[in-house]
Image (cartoon, rainbow, N blue to C red; front, side, top):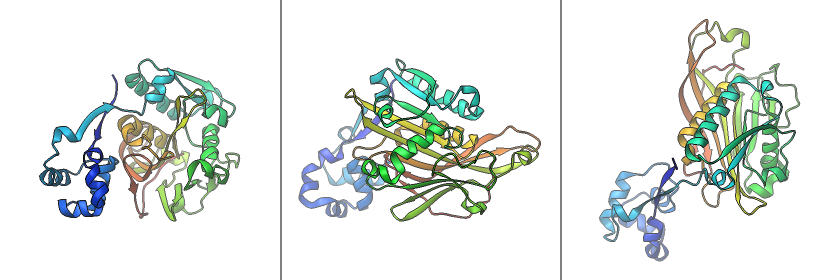
Length: 334
């Protein structure tokens, strides 16, 4: 099975009008919101505004539904198909990885096999992810800088001050854990910090002067099993980048992480469902997303189930999300 995606051809069909009078005047004459028209013309909307499309069809006789849409191959898995393989980077032996990170890894492998059947996954320990390796192989890393040190290598490559030349506008990122968190020993690089206030815990992104926080209130391990949780939440992190490989082919790097294994499992499931939204659009250096992963669990039980998913911040793909910070009374566990 090969993934398909709908491509909007409005920009090509209305090229002369766009060059002659511009988006603002086009929107005014067709009675369409300028920003909506911009997204339709540049094909970077996560959903299509039916009313706006009907107004454009009314105004421009040259347009038809058949001429506007084109079904094309989805590019997200193309680098995997071209190479015939991809590497799932394990910082150490599988036995040292978190159980939920491995479940997330299984999900990604099955997804790739669905859409890129000829692509062979390879799980292998990697001591470090160097720039050279990132430019020569398709790499998937699952887990936060706490559970998988390779995540810190990817974040350092793209989100430190030295990496500005790759990014242009460089977001500032932090994974904020509670004081005394057992896996936070200060050895996971500059992206892992301690937050004394519960409201500050989670994954934070400062971008273009605004702060976005996918929040993750905390429950200690010993309190998680007896506690009934009806509106739990964990913070997630998604990063996707395409680069020109040394062999002339494009290579892809994917990092999926959560503050806990629940968040990691949640973002893996979301990538499987919504990978089309996570492919970097032409001209974007990467796709970066911070979601809140919701879950629930009964009392006196370690089992839980996913119960929802909200993007707090999403940049670089065909969807753009900016969610204001708001009070949060949900809980998660390490």
